Length: 538
Image (cartoon, rainbow, N blue to C red; front, side, top):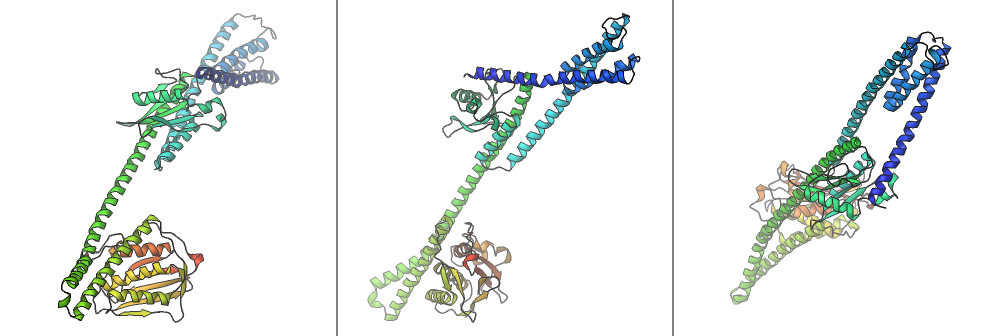
């Protein structure tokens, strides 16, 4: 079936519905005037013609207000007939003894028609006001709903759904693809029209061709407009100041020019809102991509700077010591050889720590980190950590305070050992050689957690920086003279959060820094909640 045939059927259907709505009005008018006539005879007002004529104005006014001009004129005519037949002598006859009544009937009929006309206009104005109020409310609701949406697909689905609901007709939005070709992006239709022929509207090549013309020309077209007025839909370009983002189309069900104009104005307003919202979402997406690009560039630069600086020192030591051993081996005493091989080992350990930290951060941020959970013995963990840190700081003094009873908890022992190694290494690095480093462990059964506390007597961390030291590549200005990448604490935070725990930096009452770690004891309490925002201060 063609679009014109479908449109003609829609118009006939609307006219039939209109007639069905108006027939009861004439029936009610007839019934009311008959009832009023009986009532006037019953209460004995047959001789008071002036008041009877005034009373007959009530059904005329009511008809004009509630049903319009047609029922009102019908009521006026029927009132004159009933007034003449029942109240003007001779009674029960249309014969008029006094011809002056003809003038009275004419004036009465004219007054009734004028009154009905004024009442009808008043009703029309009221309907217009209500319609504009409904339109304003609908636009306000639509604007309020789309303001908070940041996803383009969700925005367009919401727009078409609301517009289809407002107009009671199928609605569609067309947007260009990456090649600039206009495509149907989303379509919504009222539930009552699912399965009908209108269900296919918007997807056919004819609608797409009209939408493409509107997109390229930037002009409104379709039903009720000079351009392509024979079309069943109305097409509005989604235009901002200097760009057309797409086309909004609605299937027009009404054939009345006044309603077409109202719906066209509403659709243009919706199109302006949609264009502004699309531009906002696109700008937000471009800003987000620019921010991500800038952040990636910043991280890449910081990573290259940190890695190159951190690698240069141990590599220089390794190369220098190895070269000296190879070229001048006969000149060195056994003590000298031991010192040079120690330098090579220390440089290799330092490089190994750097590579381990880099790989750990990559695993955390890529979501590839998998926990190998088992029951961990806190005492064994501390022993392993002390053995590792003594490899590169053999002369530092560490005090360990453990609970009297053995402490066990559920976690990945290897990763948690890495956390403690990083923290203790930082304590060594940022505190004097003669100062004390204290490791304390508290078992807190009521909170179902185990707490690790590492105190040093170093330079300390200012309170505003105690959260920033867990940021990737952040290093406090007071520690810039000490080499580091700013990754260690970030990795610690990521691993602790994967275990469902917390880590924070505090001030040590004895001077220096305190790092506090709280980890859940039982598996039932563990929650995996790493967000990728962990930060590091090596």
